[in-house]
Image (cartoon, rainbow, N blue to C red; front, side, top):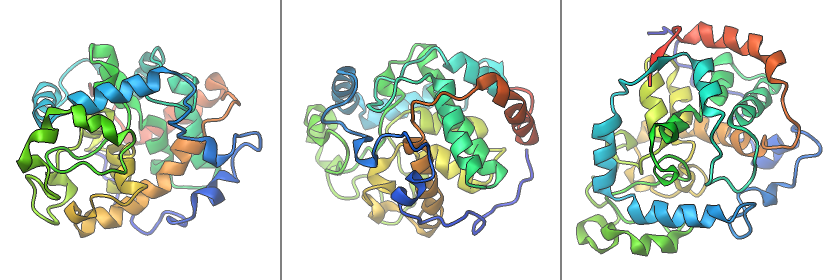
Length: 286
């Protein structure tokens, strides 16, 4: 296990507005309001994706996937190999880009590095989507990517395409449709089941190697209803509220680094392989 200390307080300006971060990126990047445009996504598949996601992500489904995939005990491979493997995937939930997965990871990490953040923060940006390898293990994309949300309690209207939840069997389960549902107020997100996807899966792969701020970035970066809209605060505890500052700091880099300028993968690889070796062993179970 990597003995990196926790680093609360070391992030630079955690609560800067998204627009302030956006201005540091490529001057040719599209305007901020054009990102996460679910009314007019670049691909028609985005809306179809969320219909399936919201219909089938029940509490029982999430629990079954956790039993099937956790702890990760599959193929062993290193981080860079995982990045190269993931590169064959096109994310049907993303309305913003058709960049390859490795290009998106490098764009995110390079944006973080350009702003002078700690090395573990840069590394979190580099690896944050590697849980999408589930798609290459036969899992449908609606069970791997896209925005995540708590299950077993009332859905927040702030979740994208909220109306599709009416097709979910849990919509009619009274015990799941109160504010807290099966949970206790302030129980903490460790005790809340989030819709199954790449965030939780990667968190379980890397949880022994990174500071807790980086792990929150990875585990909750797709949970826009919480970190962007402020929903589900009644389930969070003080630790969640403290560490979600890191998630909010990470999110603009994940979102607004999706620009047309392609990174030079071969040129950047030596730097990132050195960074990976600083925190991770040569191979991990996936």
